[in-house]
Length: 208
Figure 1 (cartoon, rainbow, N blue to C red):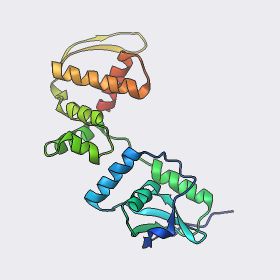
Figure 2: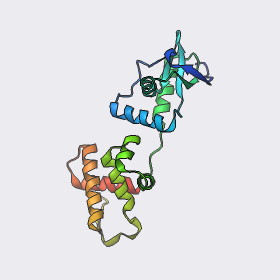
Figure 3: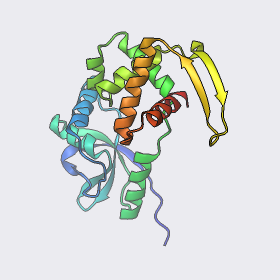
């Protein structure tokens, strides 16, 4: 049986008519919720909740953590995208698509945006309003400071060992310290004990 086509409409909804989805698969994080509340205070509420009719209430299909933040901030009503009556399967598919359809970051461009913001804001302030930890922010700022175009390549040795080449690059102490920091971060993220793998992964992620 073909599902009914979703026909969304935008409207204001009282928060006491909205309920969170018990099947919401996103984990809770008090730290991220506080950042979310800080952003709402700073920018206003700019991302609509997506809701569906469920009994005499409206269940949040996308934006459950935003709803929790709004309730704690004593909001009375909020703009929603109301998709009406849809099946559970339609709600699950819509939620997954809205949460997971994302494009990969250009780490170099992101690092430069963070560096630009840091010219007028302290890193601690950025940590409070951005979805990154202090260590990540500092690493991105350091990455943006590297002059990638003018790194001095000392030697490139071609090898036939599994298609790998050895590249020797001379860098300043500051650049090396930044790479060391990236390696440590990658090792923590990937649970890898190999510094060589972490170094390769960190550089590849920046240069993509």
